Length: 79
Figure 1 (tube, rainbow, N blue to C red):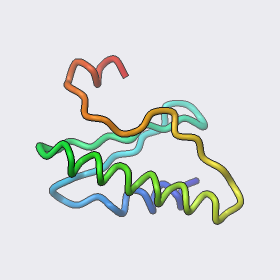
Figure 2: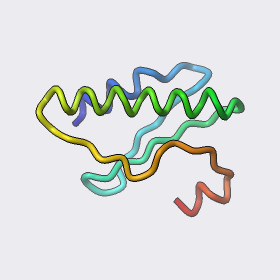
Figure 3: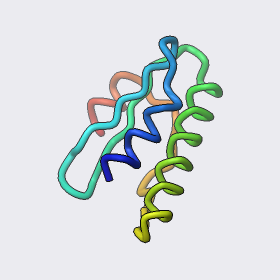
Figure 4: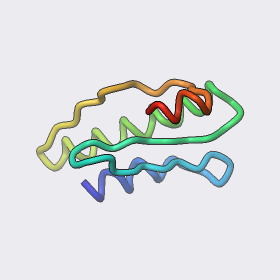
């Protein structure tokens, strides 16, 4: 799992920092702050694809509970 998350975080840039945090095993949340909503969603989608590919290569599986979407500060607190 750690290698998969590291592969996902590798899509981040200094301008678009991506954070992945553990909620409770096996639930993780990805966060990205940026001004360009489309670029942010694309980066998160790319990270999910890398994580999924790494997990599948190791014989595992991944389920995405919620696809990337833009949220406001209020929405983020609810998550």
